[in-house]
Structures are given as structure tokens and as C-alpha cells.
Length: 452
Image 1 (cartoon, helix red, strand yellow):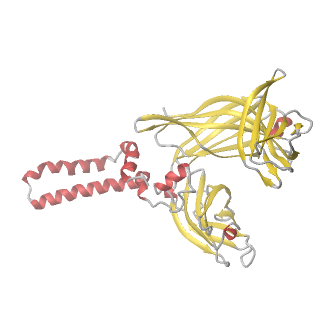
Image 2 (cartoon, helix red, strand yellow; image 1 turned 180 degrees about the vertical axis):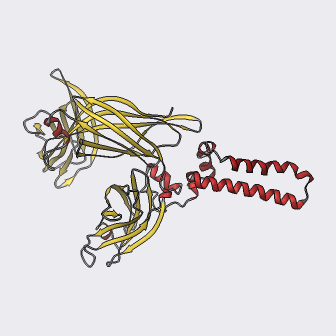
Image 3 (cartoon, one colour; image 1 turned 60 degrees about the vertical axis):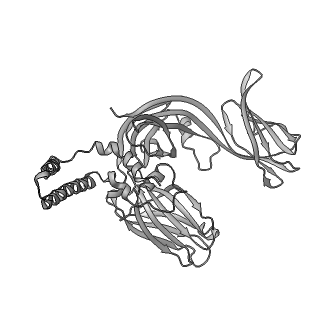
């Protein structure tokens, strides 16, 4: 845990920028000036003067608490038990005690218990930190969070999270992201469903709590981006940015000129076998720390896309911002056209020049060899292709020992050569493929925020 001295140092710049009301400033000044007269005062008067100063300083602290609560937020309590689950800005904020403690639970008929330890909130999302306790790993895995219910018809769905099982396999700790509750929703209910066979099958656990918006993480940046990245006739319109020290959300939409392009983003059916395009982006922040200018890439924490009234909408989510932000730069790195193939190909040491995708030269198994008791598979593919594979040997997935790739020239054309070395070999072997991706690099960047 960080020391109080470190926290005070990190907050130094924030405190320096605070301004006290004029009347409070006069009172502090008058109290301090009176110290100069103490040489001619009695012991009793010195005692009174000292207490005037203490009272003035306490008044100033109260002012800070009301008008700039975040400065003293590190005196809050850390939500315990989530050091190995929370990562990035969420972990830092929890260390500083920025969350709201809930400490409420629900016990199911089968003896399992769900404990909602706390939540952390900003304008972009609500993060719930909860534990499920039971008698076995099998039991604690039979639960699913439904939603967080607000008033009337309000319901906020989960959209991603991570968990960790304890060493004794009887507790799993989760951090789960939810949609941000609307401003009028304060009385909420955390709903979780049990799927374990037996007395609690279908039982819904409910934990009611009151959301304290005074403990929400303050927004650092909210702006209209209104920047366009155009590539191969498709326009990626970046519209708005909302950011805090917990999370960054970048939203926009896509403009296409044909139904063919539209299908790159919105397939006809959920079980499509065509391509789906994704624009890969990076967000870089420049900030001041200890008087030095630092530039770092912000971790990407999520992406979703769907069709709406104004066309194809997208949303990128990133980790939170550092203090003393100076600039945000968005880098449009590349497009990825992902194709699901879900194919199994049986192989042996005689396998040569087999097409992974039938009737195309996108990816070919050039050969399969046994080498010192291991299996080496060489692929040749188009230069822009990316893929992964696994080898099944006699019904067991083999360990990947080594994976290398390079660009080679074949018949005057640049191709990707990728070699996998798998542990072991056998008579019955098969290579498994889920998807392949074609990557096209853009490498364009735009400044979306600058503190001038």
C-alpha cells in the first residue's frame, strides 16, 4: 500500500490550484498575524491565539472537504480482497479508497453466499466488486449476474469483468462493469441467479443498496471530438469523448457507401461465415508527473459495435487517465477483417500443400514433420494474414513449444511463413482452426484533446 507521504505528493499540484473564499483567507491571515503579538501576551492569551489558528485551519479543511472532496479521498477505505482481480486505474483508485463500501450479502438456500463489497462509479460505468462463497469450485461457478435494477423500468446490464478463484477453491472474487445508472436512480438492486442443481436452482439473489453519487469519480474530460478517419472509402466518425481517472469512453459511427461495405461490420446472421471488420486504435496520453512530461499508451479495455438510427455505431473503452493531463492522441493503427472458419484438418508426416480455407490460397499447410519426437508444422499464407492454430494428438491438445514467423518471397511474391513446433507426435493428429484475419495498416493519428 502507498504511504500517506506519497499520496500527499501526488496531490500537491491539485492542492496548489485550489482557491479559498476571500472571507476565509482574511480569517486565516488575521489569525496568523496575531501570532506576532505573542511576546507581550500572557500564557492564557497564547492558548487562545493557538486555538484560533487551529479553528481557522479546521475551517479551511472543511472548505476543501466540501468543494474539493477528491483531495482527501485517500482517507477512504480500500475495498479489501481485490488486489489480484482489479487492474490498472481501478486498482489504483481502490488503493486510494475511492469506492463506495456496500458490505451487504445474500445467502442462498443451498448455503452459497454472495457478498457485494463495494462499487466504483463514474460517468461511463459502474464497477461492482463482489464475492461468491460456497463449499466447492463447482458450486461457485454456477452463478450468473443478471443486472443491477433501478427504479421503475430501469435495468443496467453487465458488459464485461474478471474473476479469481481462491486457493481453497471455495470463493471467487469478481469485478464486473455495468452501464452507468441514470442520475435519478439511487436505490439499486444487485441481482444474481443460481444455476446449481438442487434446492437453489433458479433462485435469484437480491442485494439492495443506495448509490452515493458524492463518491463518484469526477469527470476529467468531456468533449466533442468530431474527427474523421477515412480509409478504403469508409469513414470512421469519432464523435464524443468522456473520461475520468477510472475510464475513458470514445464513441462514434461508421459511414459506408454500399451494402457490401455494411456487411463488413454488421453480418446478416449471428453465425456468419463471412468477414467482420474492426478498426484497431490506440489512445496515447501526455501528462505531467513530478515535474516531468510523460507520454504513455492507455490500455484498451473494451469495444462494441452495433446498428442504430444513425447507422453503425461503435464504442471504444480504455483505462482511466492520469492526473495533470496535457494531451490525448488517437492512433488509427489498422483494420482487421476476421473470418470464422472453424475447421479441423487431419494431418501426418506425409501432409503437403493443404489449403486451410477451401478453394483459396489464403493459407496453406506446406508440410508436417517429426523432429526429435516433436511435431513441426510450416504454413505459407498471404502477407497480411494472421491466424492461430492448435494441434490435437490422440485426443489431447499438444503444448506449443515455439512459434516463429517471417516474410519470404515465393515466385516473386511476398508471403508469410509461419512455423509452429508442438510437443510430441502421434498416429492420429489434427490441426484446429477457429478464424483467420487479414490486417491492413493505416497508421494515422489525430489529436482529440489538448490542454491549452
